[in-house]
Length: 318
Image (cartoon, rainbow, N blue to C red):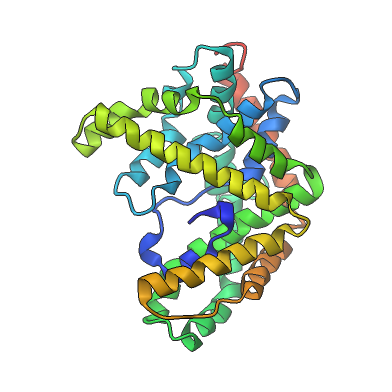
């Protein structure tokens, strides 16, 4: 799943390419939360935003057997990176990084327990609602498009399709209602993230990665650096799409184009995947979240800010 380009087409046709872990909130939403946590628009704002995105860096390692364990490290062993931060710039990045986590951070309300509806994450609850709506339409599309084993494909990929659509829908609403410039902030955060971001990732996680993979840190570190580089590129692409006058159309067309190429390359069949199908999925997802997403985000900001203070995590104290 590459949320940054709204690649629902990948999920529809290539279940083998799907990563184990799902994202929590979308990139634009994490950027918005990171800004709201501090409220100060100083010189470290873009660094803090990139730090808030960085725990998802390893999600670009499609098909890698160690992707899931690396995702768990960044979402639960996040203090390993925080403890490595020494320079002011790195502390800002680490502050954003810490607020993303799934233990008590922003992703907890997305995946584990929403503030508005405790016991189930906001994105997970909405994902289940959306899956029920999309299932007949996607099943028919795959069937009439001649995709082999369409029933098995839909059963495998529908949760990820719905999850991706919900994340992207919230991102689009944040861009529309909370921060019209969030796309540009993503682009700038990626372009100006500084040279030390991949180094911090390596210091925090290369040793554990090497141990689990049965290799050396000299081998593990370049893999981490490569993943962060690709992640940075994807963030810039996603931000660029959100900057467009019609971000829904831009994301839907990108997803349709890539899905068409992947169907031909992986399954040897030519299927015309209309951008309108992608657009309809997004429109349906937006309708499901538009009435309550803002309240959940506001509650998430308050929750994460309180947790960071309880844990003694501030840019000044790191």
